[in-house]
Each structure stands twice: as C-alpha cells, then as structure tokens.
Length: 336
Image 1 (cartoon, rainbow, N blue to C red):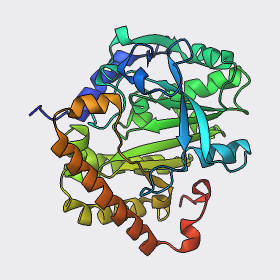
Image 2 (tube, rainbow, N blue to C red):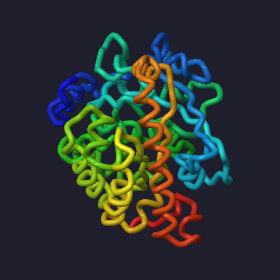
Image 3 (cartoon, helix red, strand yellow):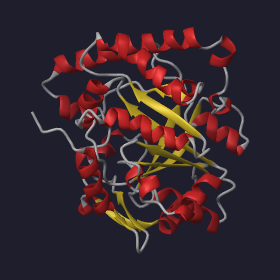
C-alpha cells in the first residue's frame, strides 16, 4: 500500500511547480492529447488549454439536484432560472491529493510542465475573449486552485482590464487542502477577491469522517479536520461560498454516524451552510476506469456507501430544516 500523502509538504512542492509569482504565470493543463480529452463532450478550446463544461441541475434519478454554479451565476448575471449552464473551464496542473474518483488523470495533477503551458491571466482572458461563442461563466478548476490562490484575483483584474468583469461570472473550485489564501496571498489580492461582485467559490469536502477522507484522497487523516478549520476562515471573509461533498468511503456502517456528524460540524460553522452544500455523485470517467480496472469489488462497495450516505444526508436535512428552507434558491441561503 502506498504511503499516505503528507498534505502540507506535498502541497508546497506542487505549488512550486505551477506558479511563478514574479511574472504572474501559472502552469495550465493541456487537455488536447490527454486521457481526459476522451471524456469531453466538446473538443478542447482556447488553444487546447480549455474546455466547455455543461453543468446540469438534474442528474441521476436517485440523487439530489445540483444547482451549482447554475443558480449563483444566474443570480449574479440577472439571468432566469435554468437547468443547464455552460462554463469555460481552465485547470491548473497540480493537486496535493490523489482522489481515486477524480476525473482528471494523475499525470495532469503532478505539475509536469510537459503536460501544461505557462500562462498569465491576461493571456487566458485573451483566449477566452477570442472564442466565438464563449459562455458567460469561467470556472477555475484543477488540479487544485487553492494551491495557487493568486490565480483568482489575477483573473479578476484581467477580466476587468478586458472590460469583461460585469458580463462574466467567475467560479472557482477549492479542495480545502491549504491555507494559502491567508498564508501566501497578499492583502491586496485578498481585498480584490473579497470585493469582486461576480464571483462564487465552492469548497469540496472529501468524505464524511477521517477514515473516508484518507481513503478518498490518499492523504493522512488529519486533513479531514483541517478542512473545517480552513472553511471557517473562508466564511469570515464574507465571500459567496458554497460546498460540495463526496459521501463515499469503504465502510457502509460508518456513514450512519459519519454523515450526521459531518452536518453537525457544518452547522457549527454556519447554521444554514449545509443548505449551500451539494453532494456529488461519484461516476465513472476514463481515468477512474483505468485506476479501478480489475477491482470491481471496491467499485461496488464505494457505490453502496455513497447510496447509503445520500439517503442519510437527505433525511438529516429534512429533519433539521423546514420545507421552505429546503426549497430556497441555494444562492439565497444566508451565511450567518
């Protein structure tokens, strides 16, 4: 069995591979020719560095709706309710974790310069602006954008300089793997991030307890508690914050206590925050199929865990919140 990842040490090493602060360059993953390309519904765009993602509210029949980032983007841009939204995605080329279910091949998560291209945010925005039918939403993904938190305010300034900040909604993913937004980012960049109107950030919680976190990420178990510490600091910034959670692991019995405790911890941070959190269903992609090949028992077990866990999650929300609270637009759920 591979040694568990020391998140703090590995995150530092990955960051050094994908950012040049002096020249404000980032290593962006090249999607053309990658294993991920096979799963794209449309060809890679923006000179092979971008892709169009279709966010769908309605997923599997047994799974809750996913309004992210559809509802926050629609609210910010003054658009009517929709069940589908297109976004322009760029991925930075490293991650501190190796989630077994990640749809990105591991070789695009290792900071390998041969599988990416050094880009400024001005250059990324220029590529985006040159697309004939560009979406109104940009999703900064990965990889792990929290390794390079400067990416977001740099992108905000570039959109402003290009005259696109009022008509473009910026959405960024966060793995809660680092505190770099506080320990590395400058105060000026933080002010830019906090003050930008058309912006939403989604933080992905990995698992429902320390054991499932470690199983999912291949990282040491203390990272589970650290996610909540980082999330608590984000909530104090006053930004438009949301969550994803992957409710899977290898112990079906653990979900019975793990999921309610997870919601307890989220409510302790902000009473209504669980209503801003969307469970993500784990499904197969080309990279995940290659990783799990020959291990059908594990696939069946983890699927059973997530199916049991989502039932518990849904019951817990119904027990804790009123029907009117549960039916509220996710973008209108207050952050206390």
